[in-house]
Length: 102
Image (cartoon, rainbow, N blue to C red; front, side, top):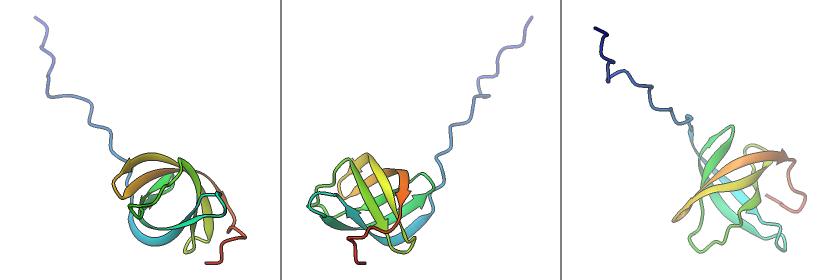
């Protein structure tokens, strides 16, 4: 007689990528008449970040995110939106935007 399969042995749930908590000021640059939106990074990892945005803001699906502490601008694509938070994926980087003075 064959041993029954142990139903308790299952593949473990995939782990969500660790996202270190940060609190960094940043600016979304939309490219629409050089419009800027001040935001806060709540967590950040190599592939993206969670941003806290003003509720009244209209953030496009793709934009440039300038983070002064990093000294770099990240090209971003929105992955999710919830109230005053958005999750973005980094799709590339650029040097500090010339039109941003911060």
